[in-house]
Image 1 (cartoon, rainbow, N blue to C red):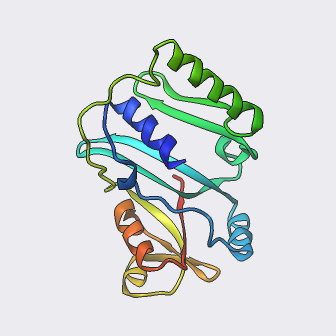
Image 2 (cartoon, rainbow, N blue to C red):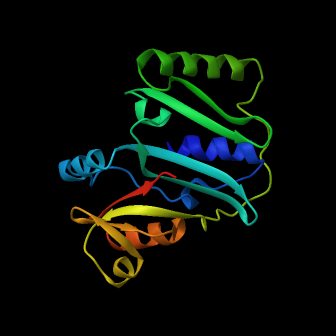
Length: 189
């Protein structure tokens, strides 16, 4: 997913982001207890890739995100994908369809080969090298060993986890690197 995010952000923002500069965290440490807590609070956990143009460059990250159980993103099943764009003039545009699986993948590979044989590239040239600037703040559900940083950012508790006040995405991911056993999920606004 991070590779798709990198390519999409580069095309959307005329940028040249490096994949390895985009922080990511998956769901390998989520527990049944976490899922029960999300459900009791009215949320569904989905792996969400985000990219936004900012004054400092481009913000981009990949992380579990708690979505309201009635949100469009909460209902995306199995091998389907949903991509949403926010435009100044058009508002929110969302596109839904299969993004994985035997036949959709095979179809895309064949189409890529046909495009290459016809002399068409995958997408236009990228822009200049662009820094990943993840200073946007989000609230997080974090289950892990409490330390000074987590206590200082605690706004409330859900079960045995902390819900933080607004924290920079870069700061939350830096904390997570020091606590690989922890689980972190952004809470969608």
